[in-house]
Image 1 (cartoon, rainbow, N blue to C red):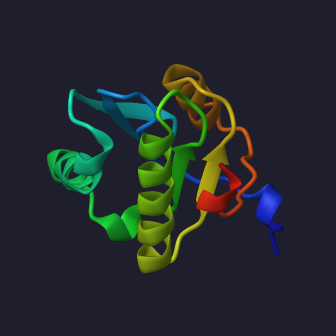
Image 2: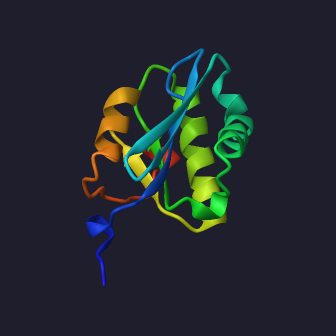
Length: 127
């Protein structure tokens, strides 16, 4: 049996709502990255997630983890991102991967490199 810090997640949804005027999403499927950038604020995150999953013809049941960037310039955006990730993870029964460094490209690189990622619940009180 795998320990929580020993798991590999083949399909990950990455959320970055840490910038004030831009929201970024990525689907990482076995190392291949599908990105979506929007000039929308974090409040549009659920609609953007639905748009990305629909565009890639990927049902939410295929996701194995949600990653969320938990640092950046917009505290409100970060809280919305973490709350969205935790809510969807609870609904879809998948883990949340908390990314503790700012930087969408760096997060994509880490998540798509097939390295084992530590899963932990991203809690809004921690920011």
